[in-house]
Length: 133
Image (cartoon, rainbow, N blue to C red; front, side, top):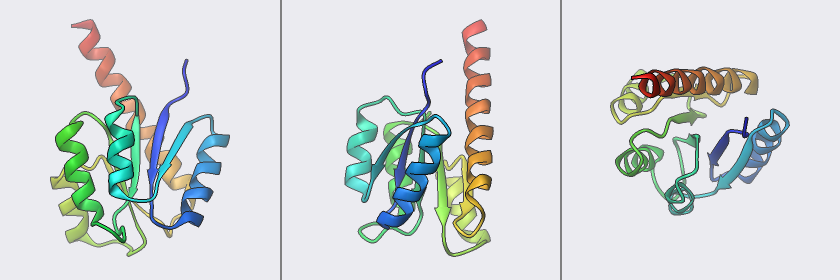
């Protein structure tokens, strides 16, 4: 089975490097972007399985990036990361705009990994159901 392709989007290089190293060791093919335009360009290549994006990007709001990603790639799962802790309104906005998941940066990276695996399993199960119809 080919490795799953993940795009990490964050304007903090240290976070990108940490997450890239972690997901690479877990067998993922990882690309990184430091801003929304870079993320959209990578996503337009059309070969991603999942996007993990910070919700608080310097240049643009992560929710705006989420909206654009879901408009252009409606089936692409997107997990939103936040350093702001649990904010019910923010989570609601993210879900309304198509986020597949929402994870705090304050949690151990293993929690993010569990969310990634959960979402990819759900996507794979849905794909298998549609293939068998």
